[in-house]
Length: 516
Image (cartoon, rainbow, N blue to C red):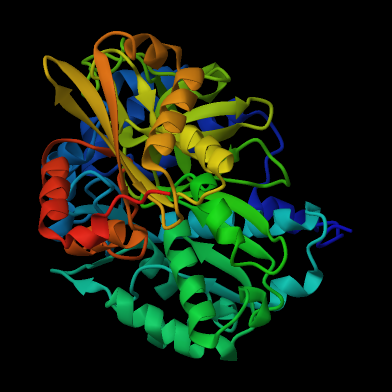
C-alpha cells in the first residue's frame, strides 16, 4: 500500500503550485516573477529588466541583456555591496543571511546570499517531496511521525557586519517552522555545536533516546554516524536501536559508491531518496519510486538555463568560452551533459553554479548530476567525467565484493606522456593490482575516448589504496569536516599539491597499500 493514500485539497494544490502545464511555460512564468520582483534593484535597472519584461520573447531578451556570471563576477560587481549593508542591490531589501560554500575545489569561502523568498521556495519544494512519499510502496505511515535525524552545519551562525553566515543546512534549521521542531533531531542544542567531532559524539550519546524514521545528509557523514552508534552500543545493525528507520534522504554526491558499505549497517532494506539542494537553491528532487533521476524544480523560485558541456562551450580547463550556446529547458536533449545556469529569488542572475547535469527523462524533467565543470580529466582527449568514474567504481566494487566509500583521481606526467593516479579508500582486504586493472577495464568499456587514449598518450594508470580515515583527516586539515562538505573526485592545481603533501606528512601505516 502507498504511504499516504489521500487526495490533496484544491487549495493545497494551488498553494504548492503543483505543475499543471509544460516546463517551458512554468519557467517563463518564474522568470517574469523574478524580473518583476527585482526590476527596481540596482542590478535590474542596470540590465534593463523593464525592457525584458515588455519584450515579446522574454527568455531570449533576458539572455541578450543579462550576462552569464560566476561567483567572482557576481561578488566583485554586486554582492560585495550587499555584504557592506547596501539594500536593493540584486534583490529587494537587505541580505540578512549568507550561505558559506567553498565547493570541493577551492579553499576560500564563498558567501552566497540567502533571502526569505529563497528559504520559502526551498520549504515548498521540501513539502512537495514529502507529499510525494504517498506514492511509495511499503513505507509504513508511522514513519512520517518518527524522528528526522539531519546531519548538517551549525545553527550557531557567524556574525558579520549586519548579516549572519553559515552552511545552508544550518540556516534552514534555524529558520525551520515550529511544527517541525518535535520531529527534528539532533535538536537545537546539538545543532548549534560547531565542532563536528563533538557534535557526532553528542548524537551518539543521545541515540538510544530517539526513535528515528528518516536519515538526512551527505552519505559519508551519515555512514560515519551510524557506524559510531553501532560500535558504541555493540549492535549488529542500526535497526536494533532505531527499528522504525525506513528512509535515507541523501544528496551532494553520487550514492552508489557508498551503498554497499552502508547496507552492511542495516537490519533490513530501506528506501533511498535523492535530492539536489545546493547553497543557491533547491534545484531537483526524486518524487517517485524507482525514478531514473530527480525532477527539476520548474514552477517555484528558480529559472534554469543549460549550456552543452562540450569542447565548443568549455576550454580544456573547464572554463566557459566567451559566447557559449545557451538553451532553455524545452530545448535540452536526453542523454547529453549540460552546465547549469541559475537565476534565483536571492539575486543570483544567470549564475554558473559549477555542476553538470544530464537529462534522463524529458517527459518528467528528470536529471542526474554528472559532475562539475572543473572536475573532469581530459589530459589528452580522454574526456573522463565524474559520472564515468562513479560508474567504474560501482562496477569494480560489485565485481570484487568490496566497499569503496571514497576516491579521487589526478592527472600526472608519465615520462613525456601522461598517467591517471587513483587514490581509493577501502578498508576491506583487496589486491591493489586487481583493483587497478578492474577500474581501468570498466572505464575502457564506459568511455570510448578513454579506451583510445589508453593505447596512445595515456600510458599508465596508477593506484594507491588508503584507509577511509585518511580522506576524512585531509578534509579536517582543510577545515571542511562535516556538514555539506564533499571530497573532490578530481584533484588539480593547488588542491592536488596539498593532498600530495598531506600524504607525505602522515604516518606511513595509514597509507599502507592493502594486499591479499
